[in-house]
Image (cartoon, rainbow, N blue to C red; front, side, top):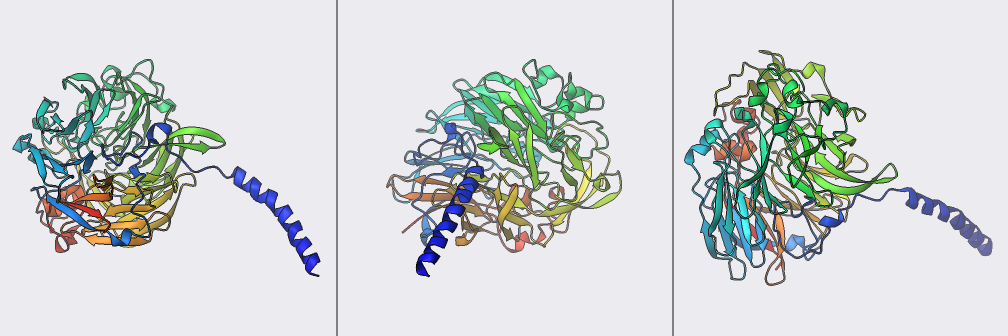
Length: 602
């Protein structure tokens, strides 16, 4: 009987083995990092995105799922500014660089010495009046390091180059005018000897633009607007959008009412990515102005979408509009992660964008074709995205009507997520998305344009979404278009994410917890309570001692936390463009702050 049973088992194995092999062969591989971003880990963190593909992934693995519970404070540093700390701490060699919110002081810390003492500081002394036209706190997303220099923006719309060794100013260029509401909060991206930046101020009727400066002189190389005639937008013979709705002459004028494009928004304040093989820079454009859509009939191009531009000339190659004739303040400015993945049996170069509309978009980055769009947030404002046409399907019952309150619009005007960047791990193939769970009531009002003053035309009150929590941190399967696990948080998750080869993912909460979670399961493995809410970007590096460290700036603020950083009255639910209505309790659980925390293993 034993021999018969053995023969039966062997027969079953022989039958099953080919099936499992076929299954393994037909199961598409997980997304991967493009070769230009899959460089050997040098232990540094030189730009906020970590690399041109914006993966925010580190190959360091000393800190892992087994020992992360032992993390302890290595040192701290005060920025001296108690506003929203959204910057990413950079590490180059034995020096850490930290940029404060306004007044945008740049600090260099000596990692080779105990306690990382200050090496130097540089104060650009931006105009104090810039604070009055900062829509959503006086934040800054950080500097970028290239070729011995640091490049960053100031709130009063200057771009600065500083010698990384000495802190001496190399050049300083004024690009915007705060009297028109133009400010700057974004981190530059340096590509082929060009420092690329964009303008903030969409809520002030600013006409958005992106500009490239010469890395050595600070002089303008090219500039492209987000609205207006093709010549201004740098649309020419090489512009080949995938969808017919984006084809035609001077659509940046024709899809607006007369002269509407001149205060049309479409500001470029978010994250940039770059594919050196295609020589394309990818950037989003902000919501159109005003927020109230009724005075601006048409698709309002080229706002609320994503551009691919030639890095050398700024010429547009393609555009995908996430929200044509945007109804609820949607931007395209948050992060775009560049990956390679198999799609319907073919290897595609893709761009992954977890959007403010509540969908994760997968787009062919060579031509702008939408491959998929799956929801990651509770939705009432839209029912889906038509992949054939690329168009979002708005819910008619949520269309704004002048002087009528439209209730229960999900997501809120902040978007399903905002500026705070996701991270991608090539080890798990997953995207880690910090986001919100917010809905809103919206009433359209009459907008009036006066340069340098708010140009919104909407009264908004935000509130918690389904389940009563306001924040989520989720692991997303890009290929399947579904959430694998999520962590619910009381307040919006307004920090960035960091993924590491130790299979640990880091993020912070607005009530001050810095957390390490298991990349595959979402289990919280360690957490540390800081003195203020966290809206910053975690980074990791190898110190001069060869050990791995993790860094985060603590200091609540930004749009979501402006009730604390701006001392706003919690009784005014419309304050901070309606965010205060949801955040009334934040003052009861955290305070202003501005402290760098750095952690290591014992």
